[in-house]
Length: 122
Length: 141
Ligand SMILES: Nc1ncnc2c1ncn2[C@@H]1O[C@H](COP(=O)(O)OP(=O)(O)OP(=O)(O)O)[C@@H](O)[C@H]1O
Ligand SMILES: [Mg+2]
Image (cartoon, rainbow over all chains, first blue to last red; front, side, top):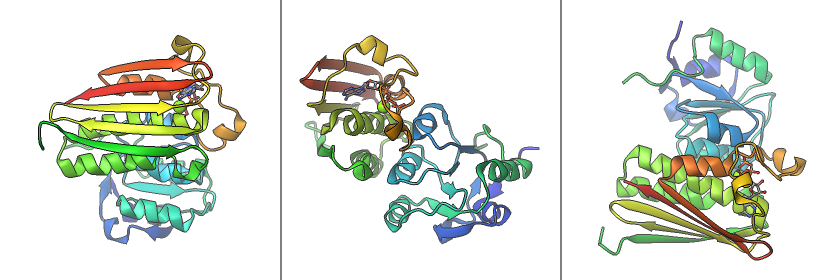
């Protein structure tokens, strides 16, 4: 079953701590992707609005911005720097971090109906 | 917008990886403000970002110029890095000379140049070993 989820719900499901983007929590997203390789995100991602990653550097935020993503989730309890959070903020991207590992975090969102490929229905 | 268009120039710092991609973010924000269609902006942004990252990780930085006209956006990336020995090989998906230290930064899958070609309407590479590389990319609107 494919569903769209509010970013608020993603935060809840992943028991994640919000780092910025409080005002965007009611935004609905339709699909997600996960990678530690920004090269692959740039090459293979289409319209996924959520990026789950264990990589921590400013290029994560810039890559998300280039791909018009709405939300970045750092898994395995990884903590972005204040500089990275600022970058995300200036691009209107929600940032959170979860203690879950990548596999569990992805599985949780997938089970909740968040597809890997579906694009937003207009 | 005048006929002369709007130009942007950036110096891309090769010493500081944490700033890599900043010029592309800036260009994207400017194009949005100028009211270009989202799909055009996405193409320009991804192509330029890949090129900008390449200049930082492979060529110790360089310069980026973006020329914005009502019907076409042109990006010119110049560096004085090592040059590309075999361009057609470098253009193949998966070819990369990046080492593990680059991979640990999330890059080095050998997807950047093919991606730049995919997202632009024209791409030319001029390169000379030991001298540097110039890449010109055009996106039609
Ligand atoms: N500006 C440049 N100067 C010198 N060599 C370059 C430059 N750009 C690309 N190259 C060479 O071409 C290869 C392929 O580039 P490409 O962008 O496709 O892959 P990558 O940068 O290695 O990995 P990815 O882009 O997936 O992160 C590089 O590994 C490098 O050897
Ligand atoms: Mg590259």
